[in-house]
Length: 251
Image 1 (cartoon, rainbow, N blue to C red):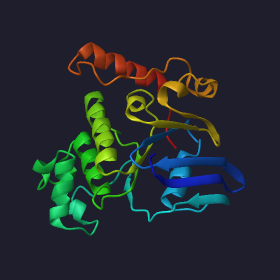
Image 2 (cartoon, helix red, strand yellow; image 1 turned 180 degrees about the vertical axis):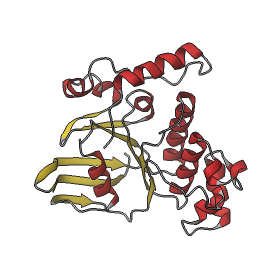
Image 3 (cartoon, rainbow, N blue to C red; image 1 turned 60 degrees about the vertical axis):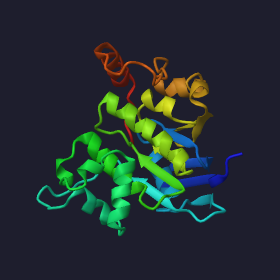
């Protein structure tokens, strides 16, 4: 049985007397990927900050029986275009060695971009660099906020596959915050649908049939399988069309 990494029990949180999280309980397990989805204003960002330990709940408990080593990949990052900084040096700002940076870049498949200015990376390359930075210290909890933002469909598929591999090789728990209801579904072990409270949770196939999920996202959501010919133009157009129909804005 997978080891429990982090548990939240009966979490409540409000800001300016507005209830944002209402009696939220959830568990994150070693080697498993959990995806947190929900509509705009659902409390996803607040819940992620509580999981990261950045803010405290008004009531409830955040419990871990092991020392947590957290890796975090932000949704986006702003870098001064005039700043002379290479991809490797960007990673070294996390106060780690040149060797560790190169190893992390190798793991995410962009070792050849070590000396490339970080500002010159494409959208997919930048996301890989941010992922490399998140795994530098071999975390046992990896929190990824919209990890495929700005990446095309084929690149998203590759990134999700990589995240699945990292969950196993690092033997860590992965929490993904996402509004993507298609590609992400086949890359996760557990889905938690949040709308102030947990509406439903479980395996992706189970969740997409749940009345609470359908009430929020509609009936057109389908799990996209990662076994097709990704060079097919027709397939890419179809997936992008599904995404436009069902995209749910993030917090």
